Amino acid sequence: MNNNTLNTQFKKISMIGLGYIGLPTATLFASKKCHVLGIDVVPSVVDTINQGKIHIVEPELDILVHQAVNNGYLKAALTPEPADVFLIAVPTPFKAGYKPDLIYIQSAAESIAPVLTKGNLVILESTSPVGATEQLEQWLATARSDLSFPSQAGETADIQIAYCPERVLPGKVVQELVDNDRIIGGLSNKATQMATELYKIFVQGNCIATNARTAEMCKLTENSFRDVNIAFANELSMICDELDINVWELIHLANRHPRVNILQPGAGVGGHCIAVDPWFIVDKTPDKARLIRTAREVNDFKPEWVLDKVKAAIFDALKHDSNRSISDIKVACLGLAFKPDIDDLRESPAVAIVQKITQLGCQVLAVEPNIDVLPTKLTLKNLNLVTLEDVLKNADVVCILVKHGGFIQAVLDIQKHNSVIDAVGLFA
Image (cartoon, rainbow, N blue to C red; front, top):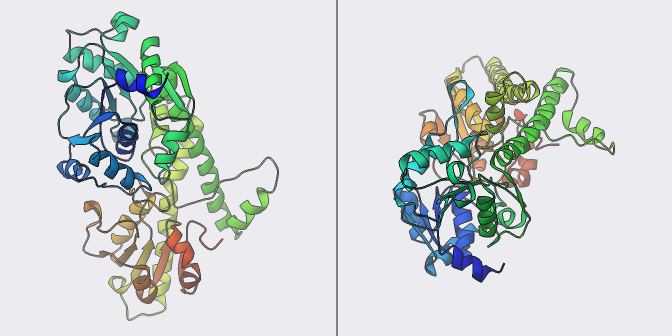
């Protein structure tokens, strides 16, 4: 089926949520001359996009958004309007006890329910616990008893519903949305078919059909697999530190084995996916998901281990100058994002470490080249956002938390500092 046929079927697409996934996805549909209305609850986000600008850091996206808005194919608003298809890409955090919190999905469902019409397709893209797509259907059916849904009418339902998770790497979102395979699980065969036809508008990878529950579990499985492997590397780094072994050299040597591929340790695990998704599996099957739970606990502990290293370095600095108090000590933290060369601070272990360092009473100098202003949770009186040059001149302790490209370029200058904690292998 060619794009002209697809564009006729889906004359208007609505994207609910214009964040790190929603905005790039909406923009790629718009780049194929689909009329897209993006919905977000933050007025500044809506205003920024309608000016042809972006509110996040993502290569290529700024140019595509500018073109899509100027050409009249992409528009943002605060409230939904009637459309042919609604895609939902909103956060799915966890709450107390690591329980999935679907409040944003529920709010999205309630916002689009009044404008649904017969023949619509609704697709959930948010990373979600198994059963979330069925819960979405229930919310919509409750709000619109005048319409039929797949659990009632199957292939002949008025509204078709499917699940299709994103599988992208921050910093390469545009490229990977186009090139990567998509797993598509409908609540009916017709929903799966309709969603497949929709994504083929811009997706060059394969669109692979399954059911909604398997598609939901597939995304959780992918991220849990990565979390377990990262946990092995992080646990190894703590073991090697205790045994006085250079973990970076060890991993390099072990990976020379043809069937060994150990990942690189870090300050923890962050981002909205890997740091969250495994808990969705644990919540559903707590007695079975023992390895997945342990990996999460190892990775959640790694920031505490880094913090202990910082405390030791502060104590050492005070020991060498009895005239100074802890309020005189300056600790530099290099990096706040959850991974290199992006501005995304969600679930970032670096942010958690910085917050706890400020509680020690010392002065904290944060270097994050991808943001201009500290987020609200980091607007603390003893925390300042500074440049790397300032840090190297003034800090007593330097803690490397993210392996940004700019830090790699300045590695020789950083190495000259006499008190450095390298949590990410910058010097490896």
